[in-house]
Length: 242
Image (cartoon, rainbow, N blue to C red; front, side, top):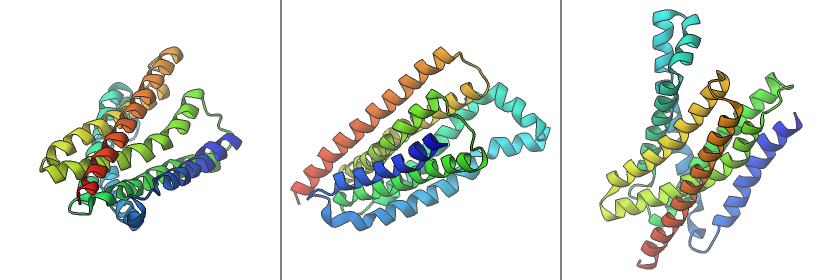
């Protein structure tokens, strides 16, 4: 219960605060109100994303009833994981694409930060639900690792890709930029869903799960850092020329 509160509530909020303070540099100082644009577009993306992700479950219930859902998830869990992750990638990156389109380039970081706020809020809500309805839950090490790294990835990836997308639009190659960010996003979310499937159905040994988890979060962190650094440098370059 204590670790759920610390890692599921206090720690993610602390990451949001630290990242906000870190982003308050001279270049970004006048653009913080754009956070609300990011929050709004991310909420819209999630509202679109969730029903689409549930389509396979609805179809299975119609065909086989509720009992058939577990069997379908067990037999086709990896395919469902890739589908769910891809839907999340497309929904959120398309929303982000339009959220930054036509706006001042230096606002893109704060638009992306708004996406991070909703992303982290969803994580907090899921952990709080577990703490309330299953207070005796003991989190495995794999879940603890995810809780530690997930907020960091979020506050790097969303602002980084927002800046990358805005720069791509500035060059007239916005669609190509969107494809790049969508593939990166789909990779990370599909991988997380696949890990959840493997853990839930015991489809992989504990040792293999640890290795897969290490690969997932190390690559997710590396991708997020790259987008943040590249996006920051590109947008700073645009701002310096204006």
